[in-house]
Amino acid sequence: MVEVRNHDLRISGRLKAGNIAQGTETITPVANTPTSVTISGLDLQGTGTITGLCTPVTSVPGTTVLETAVSSVSSSGMDLYIYRTNTTATKVGWFMIRQRT
Image 1 (cartoon, rainbow, N blue to C red):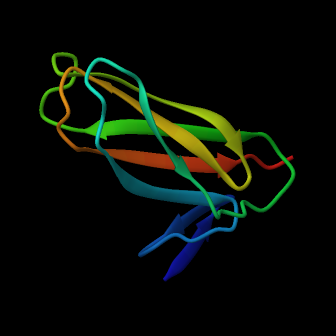
Image 2: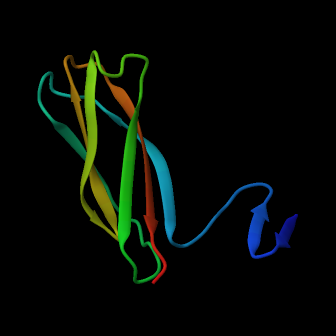
């Protein structure tokens, strides 16, 4: 059910929009080296600025997993990076949105 109140859209259930993409990717890092994977095949709709975000799915942030980052953000995808002190495969959650112009 969708309900609109004073220009405030409330959605119950799953949200799907052409300008939003999200997922998780498992990265097996090289120890003490930024290691990347490429998210590709997307087609974010619209013409606005694209923002890419990521976060590690881990119980050791700041100690073993030191950083995650994105680069080369475009409407078709982006690169995800992880910097970890060992070679344990780690899930990275990611989200992309194309702003409305």
